[in-house]
Length: 471
Ligand code: ADQ
Image 1: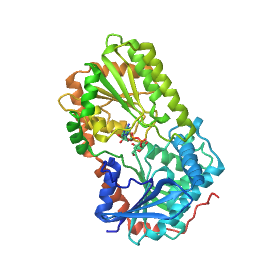
Image 2: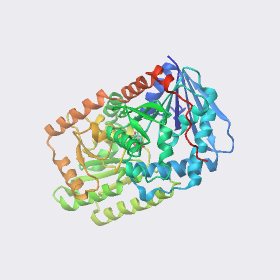
Image 3: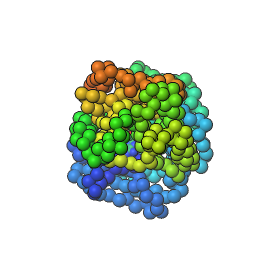
């Protein structure tokens, strides 16, 4: 068995403070540790020094590189987060396409390929993560790499007409043919991808999962990502008596808690959620004052202009609702711009009667899964989940809502708060069995099994095809 090489934009290097890594990092580290391997990516630092920072922990070598200010501006803030991210989340209105940024995106991918090349051994398998690095395999193939290379897209793949609005869509699509396995979160994403390929006759579909494009055969399948289900459940059980959960319970003064936890991002539907909560408060006046919404939203990507504007708009919105409906002894919305520890989050999830997970679009949404795993089976809370989150494909026992339907979502809040114990338990058991079946370790091993398979086919199919390069 060859080693595993993981490449992602950012690399979660083990934290000296002992803080626990998220589920994805734990699963990948477990796979890397078992096979031995390398995890390569951006250090998060900006400098003109292209030297690699290498450290070894157990069986895993972490290889980090700084990027220059220009690289970060064009590749990360520019093309990745102002073109690919909004387009994949159906926000064509927010996409700021520029040739300079696109060229920077391809340039940084070439740079990563150059850094990775000396690390690769003959029987290594390479797993590339997310939209920042789509062209990486094509760049490696140009450099003569014939290893198995897989790609996993953590965010949605949009409907073809949305995708085609990106001026450089053809090149992005063709670059994916250099992978052996292209993984998506849901079948809908995979079908959108298939339609994007076939509608413009850029390639063809051999069967459900096998495609041919640009002279290469590859597999495209969905691999819904999971969480560390059992561990999260254990943490939540202990965390329900943690200081933060106690403090929260005391400060609620007997009121019910509804929780929302999201990075500050326009895809998460936080504005619409606050509107829906306000509608619930003004329509269901009998239970209005029995509940408080805690919205925990750490800032992210603050240097991308849309995010800074959204930060201000949300703070104003929460303030307006509190000012209009709050009383001296009751604040409807507690809005917190902070990160919390996993224990802290798990404790809050566990005491919350309902979670509002209402993204306008989301690849998967792990918060939905974490909330379910954190519940007490004797008295579980209700998950109110957007049908546009990837998680809705698996968690169909949640209260599914359309986040654009403000009144409907508001009514679902009332329904959640009034739901019988029996119905809550039935829904929870259903969701929990899905989460136990497909946790993050299962996700990782199913993907890697597909990636490791079919070497013979791959050896035959690897051709000296090189996609046109943006410069
Ligand atoms: P994200 O868009 O970051 O991930 P999500 O799946 O919800 O979205 O994951 C967020 C993670 O951050 C969760 O584990 C959550 O606990 C944590 N988190 C959020 N707020 C926090 C806070 N205040 N304090 C501490 N932790 C917090 C992308 C895609 C998703 C996809 C994931 C994984 O956009 O659709 O599910 O990758 O593939």
